[in-house]
Length: 398
Image 1 (tube, rainbow, N blue to C red):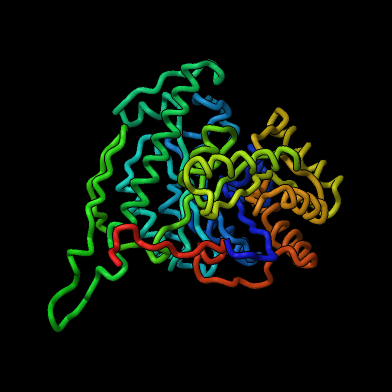
Image 2: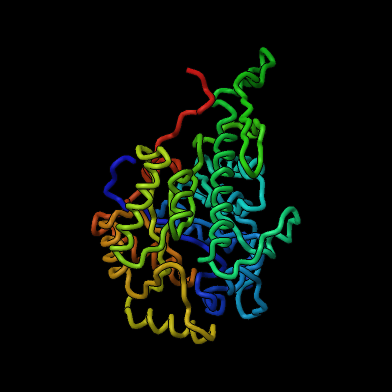
């Protein structure tokens, strides 16, 4: 990665915010949740703050308060728009910010996703990525009917560990097939010569002939090579098995350390896994995920969190560290975690309508005052914003 004085910032958008009672805040306007305008406004605010990219959450089943099964709650947001389609709708309304929709690899097909993300890269003029995710929920497998997934009773059991490892290995193969499909057209495969009547050079389209333990893909894609060559691939990781996926196939890993010591250990483990995977020389960003409640007064932020917890009927907990305080205090924490080896951060606004503007209009100016964040967009593609070069096509001959 090219050196940069700026840390990288992204926001993760989900529903009306990451606190389950966020939809009940007046600023959230839940009646607009399933409109394009709602999401376009959020992304416009993120771009106003010069953020690198936004991620959109997605899934193959309704949201649930339980990790691996549905719930019967009616007091929390349920239902989503398709993340890739949503990104494709909004991207042309923007000029600089990247779009990274979530893609669930477990029951979808690499061929479909490769052309969907390639299309997103075209309509965004080179600002697309994806966040690859697995699912171990039996009810989601039942939506497709092609295989069953046994219920996990305890994550530390040998059977559960074998299942999770297999799902992440499948995800790694999935990304590999997607990446090969992106390269299945050489950059100059399209001739478009009206005089000669040649639109395409068929010798520059390639069968990828991918054979894995879970699927085989012949190729080539039906979509020409994306403008970035390879859109940015990312994944959320909490332990060694998903760290291995990040090291093998991702450009960005999102991790959830709760202090600088944990951040340092996680980064070291991912770098070691990169070396094992033969990617030690390749740039891989490690972003820290944090849920944020931001106010000018830390007492106000704490009171707002308490009020939302009361509305939800329980204390909000997260896989990521929950930060409650001021933009300046958050800037202190980000700089501390950056010194531990993280290269960027994906912030999860507790309430989009409140905490996203607090990021763009409070945190970003504070970081700029510290010369820790950009003052203008310095690249036209997401890879460029992240300091990643455009990769050569693996199938092109010199």
